[in-house]
Length: 247
Image 1 (tube, one colour):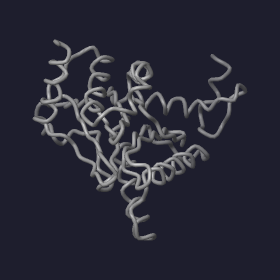
Image 2 (cartoon, one colour):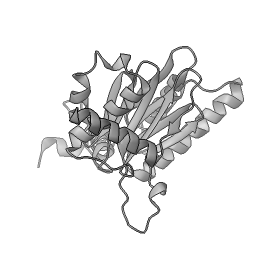
Image 3 (tube, helix red, strand yellow):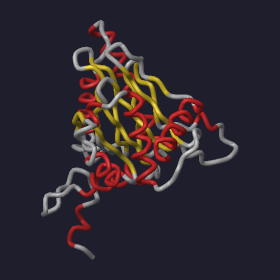
Image 4 (spheres, helix red, strand yellow):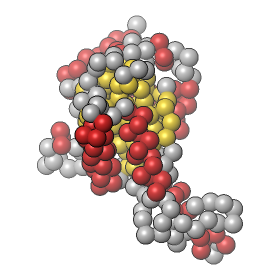
């Protein structure tokens, strides 16, 4: 038996190498339990999230299966991980956003909401009686000063703004794809941003999509609202991507 095997019984115990094994297990659960990959991109005046839509049963209503959620009219989140933890995290985000607006009289900025969720996640790492949520949150929203913004919150309570990022099973492959385009991404229009995110997801998964197999949502401009695209709109983007590939 490994010497370190005794140090993964509680989340609050460090191993001699300075590792928290329960947190590493939480990251593993967040990335692999859903089997999904999510991509978030920030263009010149828009922020986009794209992920797969996997319907587990033919009897389930497809529109009810989603990992993309509205939090406020101007903030949305793509949450990958265990679906029960995803629902709990989204419910808490909505509560925190509503509580902020009730207290201060204006809508919560995306960065403030992401920081609040990160603080809550970090508290869950401090006590053996708690369990971190196996969820990675890709938050997109409109900041009144900066415009559209993308933020990532992980189970350990770490959060940062990004030009482009990914989460889930193929996170590293998607990140490598985006890194090659990091100079161009900030200049993309909303259509280019959406199509680049879709191409990134298709590239790392090695497959083509139909309109009902992916979810796409975005915010645009400083006054924009968070909005999910319909299957017909997604098909239009997929057709445009196919035309560009053939050209």
